[in-house]
Structure formats: C-alpha cells, structure tokens
Amino acid sequence: MLNWKGCLLALVMLPASVMAQNAHIVRFDLNEGMKSFLRANQFDVTGVNYKTNEIEALLTDEEFANLSSQKSAVIKFSFPQNLSAAPDEDYKNPDEITDFVNDIHAKYPDITSIKVIGKSLEGREILAIKISDNASEDEVEPTVLVNAMHHAREVMTPEVTTDMVDYLTSQYGTNAEVTKWVDSTEIWVVPMFNVDGNNKMWLENSMWRKNTRGGYGVDINRNYPTGWNSCNGSSAYQSAQDYRGTSPASEPETQAMMNLVASIKPVFNISYHSYSEIVIYPFGCRPKKTPTAEAVEQIGAEIGKKIDYKPGTAWELLYNADGGDIDWMYSEHQVIPYVIEVNSSMQGFHPSYAQWRNKTVLRNRPGWMHLLNRLNGPSLNGVVDSKDYQTIKIFKTGTSELLQTYKINPDGSFFVILKTGVYDFSFEGLKVKKLSNVDISQKVSVSF
Image (spheres, helix red, strand yellow):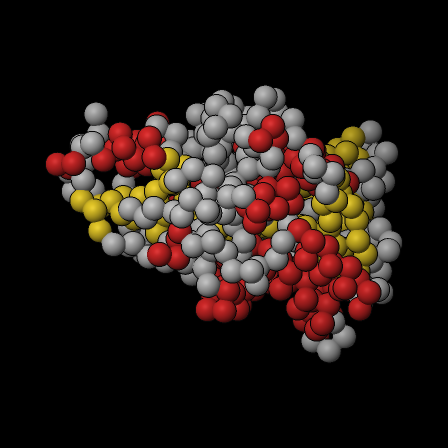
C-alpha cells in the first residue's frame, strides 16, 4: 500500500448544478509513486505542475470517501476556486466555432477553404480550415496540421487554434514571414474536434471529457489504433474518463481525424490540450522511444524552450497513455507530432477568459510558429516518380547503420525532417538511386 504520509491534498466540492455528480479536485505531491497510485486506481488525472511539483486528480464522492478515510496520513489545504468554476461564456461552443470558420472564409476566400472532415456521433460537422495561397488546390507543398479539443472540457485549446487562424489570415500580404508561410505551406487547422463532448460540457457537466457515446462517452484520444490497450494507459470501464472504447477507431470522430491525416500527409502536427504546461512527443507507453528520437526530441525541446513548457513523453511527464493520436500519426504516417498542454494548475481547465485568454494564445504562438519555420530545414525534400521509388533509407554516412526508413508520399513528394548532419540516402522501389555524403544543415531539395 502506498504510504500517504507527507502527501499534499486539496479538496474542492463542485456545485451540483455544474457536475452530473459531485466531484473533488484533489492535489498531491508529484512523484513516481503517486503517479503510479493514481493510475492504478484509474483516477482522472487532470494535470501536473512541474514548477510546484504537484499533481491533481478529479475524484468522485466514492473515490474521495475511500481516500479520506486515511485521515491520519492526509493533509487538506486551500485550493484555487477557478478549478471548480464553470467556463466563462466567452469561450466558444460548437456553433460559435462554425460561425468563426465561415466568417474567416468569407473574409479571406482566396487563402482559405473549408472541409468537413467527418460528422460526430450526434451528426455535428467536424470542420477543418485550410490556409494556403491557393487554398482550393492541392499543391505539392509541405503540410502542417493543428487541432484542438480532443477533450471536451479543455476550453482554452480552441482559442489557441482560432488565434492561429486569425493571425495567419489577417497578417497575410503585410507580414513577410506570414506571407512566406502561407505561400509555401498548406496549413490545416481543426479548431474544435470533440464537438459533441463540448456541447455536453456546456449544457450538462463542465468536467465532461469524452465524446457522448451511449451517454457514458469514449475518450477519443485513447481510441486510435496504434498501441490501443497495450500498456495500461487507458480503461476498459465505460465510467472511466479514459475509456478507450470497444475497439480501435470505433468512434466516428477518431475516423475523421485518421482520414484527414491520411489524405493530407502532414509533416508536423500539434494537438492542443490542457492543462500542465508540457510538450509531449511519442510514444505514450514506457519505455518506448521514437526511432527518430533525436530529431523528434530536439524539436520538442526547442518548442518547450520557446514557450517555457517542459518537454518529454507522456510516460515520462504524466503516465502511460495508449491509443493516442500522436502515436498513431507518427507510426502510420511518419508525422512529427506533439501534444501541447496549455495553462497550469493555477488556471486549470476553465481559467478566467478576460485574465488568461490573450496571455495563453500569445505565449503559445512561438510554438506553432517554430514548426512553420522548421520546414526550412535541416531537411531533405523533393519529388520523384512514385512508380519508380517508394521509400527512402537514411544511413549514417559511410556506414550501413540505418537511421530511418521514410515512405514517399503517393504523389512522389517527400519531406524528411532531420538533425543537422551528413547522411547517405538510398531511394528504393523499382529503381534504386543513392546519394552519398549529403550535408543536411538547411533545407536540401532534390529531384530526379
């Protein structure tokens, strides 16, 4: 049994009018033993704070009663009330997101297009907006994807994505950097992904996390095929906040994101979540690392430095997490993907809009901007005949040490993100073409 001595614990009772059942936000000391205990008991871990070394969880009445029975080892203390507050009405609901996307497209029709990537369980359209100089065309350009709100209660996350859309469209043609990004990249934004869950969050339960399957909900970000139900990083119980569903990709929302990624083949992705002020990269299960760990970790660390968030894998920073979107994107479509958890425990899921909205989006701009700039290299890009070449093998120069195998896109394009270094490349398929001693310190373009 875990020794509770010295654990910090905070209690807030949420109003019955806000929650479907009364619940308690509880704060503990952050350590490996506590993280393991919370996961073993399938508590809803809401966030961590690495600056104060604390971790929070949302407990039901029954869970809290069992915990608080150990009175001799539990210390209560005051807790910021904003973690129990319902969200400000200034945050966007699904209808307001639809209005925003339509308004932006009406204002900037030449550089935007709208795509319905799928429909939710309740029939709501899940929208993506594309920003590019020829938005109605499919150009051979690198693609970047950004999405928000896999989890319904994380109301700040669509503010980051809508700010990105607003910034890129309003600055195009006057800001040289923005104009270059839009002219040379296809930028896709899904401003609110879990539209049903967010609607339920506004109407019924301000701490609702999942979609609305059967009234109990499935955690969409535990429903992707890669690693599904593989490392005790999700739950088989419908009542759990991280319930993974009956099978991989069982949810229409999951399928919508998978179809979008398969069609646009992004180089980078950011999935915005809250809260914890961390940057997460693959993989979610201990102790798996990415095959191209150096580049993935380096870029994650660079983002973390720019926005002052702590980088790492989910299992390092939080807990094992299986069936997540970034693991699937990386494994199946070689996307370099990140989860960015905005805000800290001092703001929680529902921070004051007036106090924190602008601070949060401004703080996070350098993160997505860094990925757009990182497309300039170090990297290898180009277009080949996809009938002749299907893969690129990347070797440590002068050796047979295979560093990475990259699948060329169906249209023959490729965009390989690398660390600065000297590499050998072998383009393979019906034909073989080798490039030796290629210095990758910037964007290197090749075609043949």
